[in-house]
Image 1 (cartoon, rainbow, N blue to C red):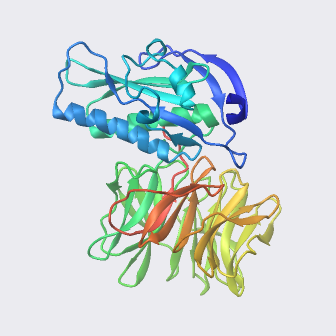
Image 2 (cartoon, rainbow, N blue to C red):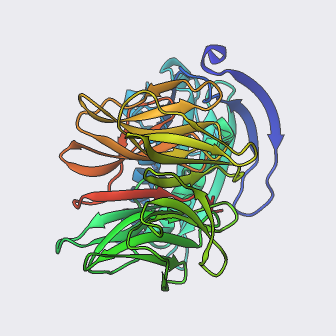
Image 3 (cartoon, rainbow, N blue to C red):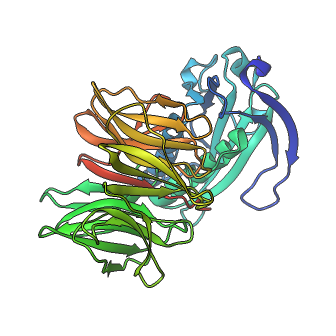
Length: 445
């Protein structure tokens, strides 16, 4: 059965010696790049107290319960894992410990569970909680990931859960970044203004980073994760603002009345669309924020530039064929080519970091949908099905996950899918409507 579920079975022994690590055996690898990968069944045993005298406060119990919830919720975002409740396992929730010697793996095999997560915890003298969390390959049986964390507040719960799930995903797929990156999104305030918030891709630890009484559009991260560039509209005027990680906001003066879709290239330079010469063209700014070069110029409207990690490919929107369509510019070959043919109204392109794929929004008879274009074959396929409108897609740093906006439940909210078009998962950003989204390319350790 293990051969049917896994594309590759390898045995690598990895020993960790730090105080927050346990010995690990890496035994599994999932090829999620191959379409149709079957989901693995994963079960999580509720946290087990490992101390001698059980004494805890309401805060301690709340942190433990929330850690379990976050781990379980994180699994929900991984389409190649299917959560199996412990009550669906033969024998139910009856365990004395969290290590290999404490677990009867046979009942998990019979219950068709492939992966098992155990959580143990100690209450330290200073009131902190020490969490031990392990993931096991049920069929070997062996441990593939094990870590220990010290917790004393809710943010540490999120950070620890994300670090562990990031390690688990890395072990299983070779992919990294979903649980260790940030998203920035524009949220509508009650007074009608729009401001930028930062959170994890699941919506945890939301932080408001701007407090402006106007409209913010098109936020974009720098590749090092230290800056966000965006357009700010107030009193009918366009401004270019730069948010710095230390909290400062800086206005950048650029010629033109209309300044839209700013972004960064991999070298840290700002690229944007402006009507400097009366028409919206794409410009490159130098280190002093002055116009250095005109990258794209035509009689039409050229907007929404985006780069791959090498900086050799740039996608953008142009109306040179009457309707907006997606174009690719190759800086090495100095060649521009149209890559969108699936519809007549195509916008919001985003190129994967590896330069292999472009995603964009197309208008269909049933609303906007997200399209994936393979740049090697120029094959296009629609990867979302609505209902409502699916718009503004952006790649995660792993070139696998995709975030997009949809009003399928009324208000525009953030959803997460993959390049294979797996069932979208709603990101909890609160009640307010979301207007734009950007996913950082920086993977935080």
